[in-house]
Length: 78
Image 1 (cartoon, one colour):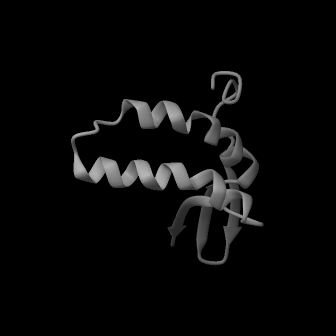
Image 2: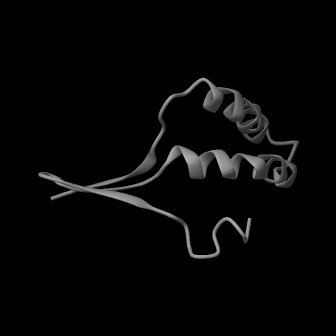
């Protein structure tokens, strides 16, 4: 993970007429999926909510393979 974010987390941005959008692009998100098993292993198993979250985490790589474009970010509106 350190090698991926050595220079910081690579946020992309877009300035629009209504504000600013900061986002992670699909390339970075695809690289981060290699760490999902570690995240899953840290989650408690006796918690029903965490069990559901784990199921979603397991589906992320498959969903990304079927996705042509994804951006996870924040919109800051004037």
